[in-house]
Length: 257
Ligand SMILES: Nc1ncnc2c1ncn2[C@@H]1O[C@H](COP(=O)(O)OP(=O)(O)OP(=O)(O)O)[C@@H](O)[C@H]1O
Image (cartoon, rainbow, N blue to C red; front, side, top):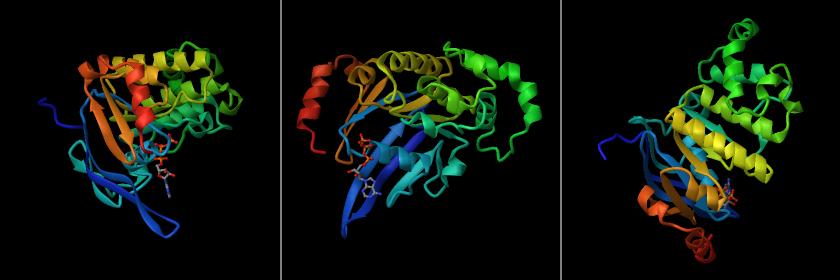
């Protein structure tokens, strides 16, 4: 592959002190993510998936190692500084949006992420049409809730809004941290379909943590399996296409973490 990696992790280790004992919860991780990659990530509870996202997003500084974004060393960049390039959607629908602010206000704020500009309500009026169009993409009625405080939305609508917000700032990298896990099966499947559509239409680079084996196998062009703070497997598209749910279940049966 000739492409330059968009994201590079070089020997990234995270050590925590647990009851007086140092434990490596990420162990010398080396990883290259290329533009347009849609990588699904599986792993047992405690394997280090969220920690991996925390060091990529800047929420956590690695104990050692280096993180490069588009060739630039961002290891010491704050989470706020990285927010210009990286968007993250969490499992909890409450985490992505400000509950007292309306759908429109949340969306406008998201578009200004990393730009250090305050929210201007005049702008909201000017951009209403464009923002409503963005919301209508999900086809779940969000566009009709423009003036609704997000705290009054259903979990599914709120998570869809979080995703729309995450992509509206045109991030270089989208991190989806079990973003469908808190939703009922039908809403979860709808959000996954929408997620896949948005990623492919906008050619986004995305890492998605999931515990849904079907989703991990069905979506994306690459599959990482984490185990005990290490990348146990890094399957490319062709290999991934030949994997079955049983193969993955077998892995989980024998995993350490
Ligand atoms: N600040 C911390 N101090 C001590 N241990 C920590 C800390 N943060 C994470 N851990 C431990 O590191 C390991 C990895 O945690 P992490 O949350 O990254 O796992 P995960 O793969 O995301 O798990 P899950 O699927 O349950 O969300 C776990 O054993 C966790 O208890």
